[in-house]
Length: 351
Ligand SMILES: *Cc1c(COP(=O)(O)O)cnc(C)c1O
Image: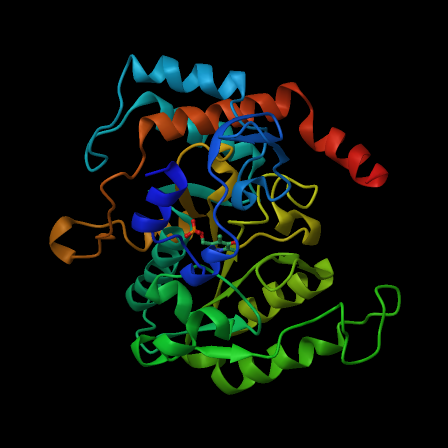
């Protein structure tokens, strides 16, 4: 049996109709270097999709390779409940000055969907423990995407992913968001006055008092078709959330780590979220890891004597994996050393 035959016999690939593989068989990759991938026949490809938007600094990057190899000789993994390790601590310290103001507490998870699940539970429990048990719902924009586990699907608005599972999902509020490419108000970026914000305003008037949090992809609705929208919309969302006591969850899983030119996309709007989710670029596309990062105000609502049962009882076996933390530290080091954001700004004009 050839490699490809064995693949088609055994592997159920993600997010595709496997019958299509009869016509478009998977490309079996042998190795990669920089932006190039090479299949088992030696054919070269440019990885323009960055291996599902996560590969920031190229395949087989020497700096990241060395960091992981070094960590392998030291410690591969350890339970993160009541244990800790240097790479995780140093990663938080390295990220702190790069994050939007006020985000100071890091909860480790292991993929983007998990970081969204963590954010939803954290927001829900925060409201519950802060005298607002009636705030049980979540808001999201039309055409939003936040991952494919049940909770994350429940705050996504893309029918393609969610339709069949509707009976399994939470009853959230999906309001009319935005579409700058086909603006229903006939505006352009120069004439835009966020006319479409009326969708958010209506939703807050109707449901603002029963909502725990709003989740949004900042600046860029990725899965919806790389739809980019103006920072003003985010600023207004922040304002509405403050007005109604609703938490703002900033899903930077796709847009974070320089993807929109800033380290985190919400920086374009000059505001901070209450909770920030990040994953894809975090380890440069090397290892599955994600972070749900929040404010001291939220952290303090969980901080009490054990018997009050206010702790955040949420965990993943691979939370805070040391190898992934070392990869992430190497990514931050290389981004700073090589001035990646500045170079990206120059290259984007050329492109
Ligand atoms: C990819 C993505 C997720 C889900 O991350 P996974 O690691 O694939 O589970 C969540 N939110 C956004 C905005 C994403 O692009």
